[in-house]
Amino acid sequence: MPSFRPTRQASTPAIGADGHAPVTNVTVDCGIYCQGTRLAGTYSTAAALDEVREVERDGKKAFVWIGLHEPDEAQMQSVAEVFGLHELAVEDAVHAHQRPKLERYDDTLFLVLKTVNYVEHESVANARDIVETGEIMIFAGANFVVTVRHGDHSGLASVRHRLDASPGLAELGPYAVMHAIADHVVDGYLEVTELVEADVDAMQEEIFSPNRQTNVEYIYLLKREVVELRRSVSPLTLALQRLLSDHDDLVSVEVRRYMGDVFDHNTKASDRIASFDEMLTSLVQAALGKVAMQQNTDMRKISAWVAIAAVPTAIAGVYGMNFDHMPELDWSWGYPAVLLLMATVCTLLYRTFRSNNWL
Picture 1 (cartoon, rainbow, N blue to C red):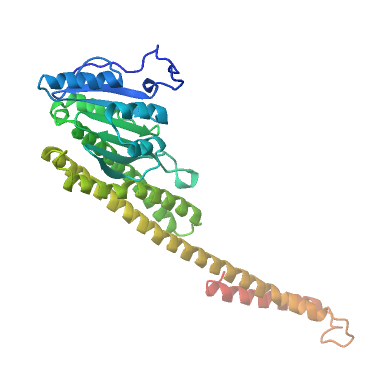
Picture 2 (picture 1 turned 180 degrees about the horizontal axis):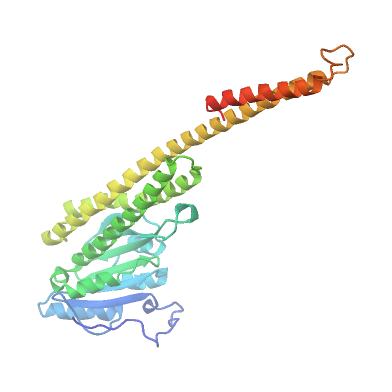
């Protein structure tokens, strides 16, 4: 495997002569691939493209892949000038917060991918976030690929290693890199959906377990995260469909075959997320029904105890009146008899309520 060195050097200046931070400050890697094999060496953005053009003059196929992490407007503009990127796509790449989409600007395709990452937690009750998202923008042209990442969990090192180890895939050109990145991102969707499914199953078990208190807020938290996951995954389906059906003058048949597999995986992830959303909606309704039943049970218990307490209160209230002529007022056994009457009636009410499952 051809070796390569990182593009960032210890001597790289923090601020350029124009007062802006140089592109190398946000460049993760810059590599040249010739006939499927990565060339050794470190290149700047402009030098890499010049090298590719020099190789192409010899009749060989080559392209450059430059990866950027959260560039600012000036840094992105300098890259755009080298590769001729459209200003609208450049603006999207800088400011991020885009929905997954595919756009074409002349002979350059611009693909936006949302990355997702599962935040480890012991239970939903202890979690503040379950899924975090990032973005990857891909500019792919005839002899270049520019990737712009936003987020700390969306690294593409594994994709580069895979490409370096698979000359046959890299030989298919820049759009093969686009496929490899999309495949990597969609595989992440499937992994996250499996982990989220475990959370949904745990929540379902809690809702339908007897004698357990139900906190609807936890279901709302999980549903909010599933909605965020759905916004990241579902729109990509349309973008991949367009990539499969259109732009056949740019994307080869072989690459589109690979993209078809990515499309199938994304559809699978999207369907699973939609099922999570529907299931959580049902769980919210079930939880609200369970809460209502718990409230009804509590009210029955309270009503039963109030009824029992009303008996001695009523009898004591009667004998607390200041009248001279009352039944059994002068009887020596009157006090114990009244207490016995209170206890008897309360016991009968208690046994009646217990037999009717009110207590």
